[in-house]
Image 1 (cartoon, helix red, strand yellow):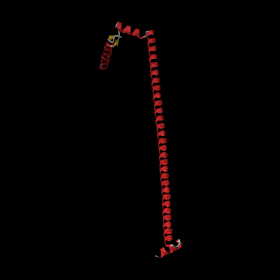
Image 2 (cartoon, one colour):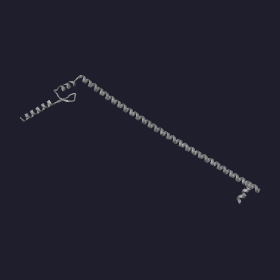
Image 3 (tube, rainbow, N blue to C red):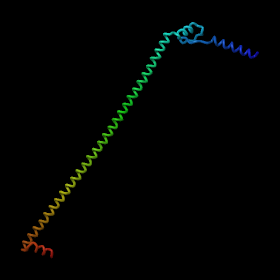
Image 4 (cartoon, helix red, strand yellow):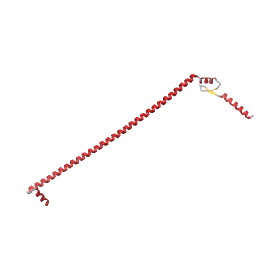
Length: 166
């Protein structure tokens, strides 16, 4: 008997919740299922025109979503293209800088070679002057010896012998 009582109480409880069930109308309020507002909402839920409008709206939403995705991909592609061009410019700049540094090194080497050539030319000119000066001094010495030998009345060879002895 206790089990039948529990079942009866359960059935009555379910029936009470069935009366309490409500639906939400388009105005946002909740009404019992047997009210005209719920019936109107149920009828409008199956209206083919509304279903068609919803399908069109869903299709337009999907199209806009795909279009937005396409535009984002296009933007990403443009961004990547911009990055590639920037890297290309950077590499080009580095290559030009390396080329410029190499040209500067060549100019520096050429300048140092020109400086070394000038120094060598000066040294050769100085050596030539020194040789001329030595030659001039030697000639002056020889002329003095000749003049001294003539003053003494001897030949140059005799003068050299006399001079080397004393």
